[in-house]
Image (cartoon, rainbow, N blue to C red; front, side, top):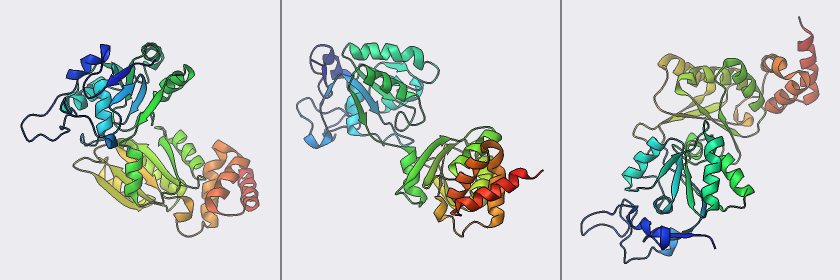
Length: 331
């Protein structure tokens, strides 16, 4: 029988130590659920806030992307009930836990130690413990190595539960004003110019809104490459999401590239949202087609370059293929 933990009052056996894991508010006017997440000992949580007792297993817990208040009540209860919290950076997670008065053991789990730390966490899970996985900010597994731990847990038939919450991808998409019926998240663009341009060339054919992460210091260069390869697409640069200086700047790619070239790197973390090809405005000209093909031919070859440019431009594939052959034959 899987172990169970009572997140509000501690439970039995090993779970009894949960009674002091979450701090309570002071004063007669404290709300039934205090800012720190602990409920008075004589009061049961209402059903609509989620379960009060957690089974043993792996829990993927979303954490705030900026504003510490953007964490769910369920996440606070789970973190207070966990036997261990696996964190991308334990120092970052310790600050969040301190804000909410939670005191639970932390252990690092990140790209550089996943091969060693993963089996140790699986062993604890097989022993019937509750393991919470958190990233520095946002939803675990999005641009972090958590998928390896989930893969290993599922292979061992260990229960895996997601506690949803903040996500920079979805926050930026909601604010950008771009089509939201289809979107493609491509993570970080490559740091070096050559691989980055090849990556963008492949993304040109994606018939959906693009969502990308980018370093602020590489933002201007990345926008310049995006503008040259994708053309005059509307886009948005979202930064400092949910924080005091949150900003979303909307403009065509070439205008955004010029702005950040002149203004310099912005502060904070950046999410790029780029409209799909059909929202880019007028149909591509023959000059646009030639420019796109020249960029794509060297890394991709004639056939693949023609496929991508045809899909992105709306031109007939046979026409693009013939033009690609002609360009490839030029000195």
